[in-house]
Length: 189
Image (cartoon, rainbow, N blue to C red; front, side, top):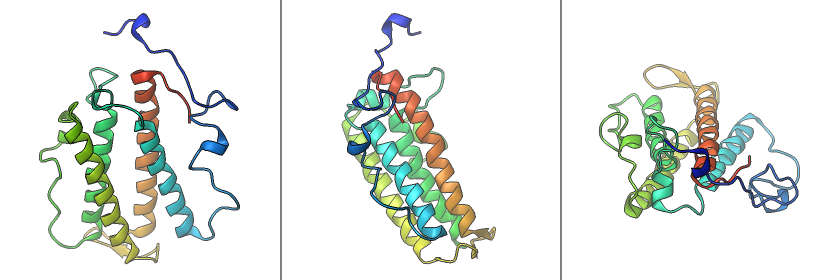
């Protein structure tokens, strides 16, 4: 059990707003101008922002820090989140398909978290898996630009799938906030 004195001091790189991750001018999620036009573009923009947030929360940490389980008895870690979201991206393609489901990336259920170990090769593989699976899911969904279209065995609407993707990343970015703060004290949005 961690004692209060074992906890890292809270810190941020922001100077304008000390509760933020980065100053607005340095935050790559901030873009100039008005938001995107249209429902699909808006959904994609939010998804892109949450994907970027997850990567930002993991930046600058070594394999041990990424694999640290900061809230016992949970098996959740930042590396586990990266692996989990790669697994989830793959599974979303199963929702679109009428065919046989794609196999799990990491084998058995919960291996994405439980086998997230402090090994740089695992970290590199997790990022590679996430990027590949995101790209494959994005490409599969690009074939269905009508948000009302129902696909797959269960007839899920593309709109529902897009909103679910945003929800999944947003929820896990909240976890990443807490995990990062427990790991090295860095705070912010």
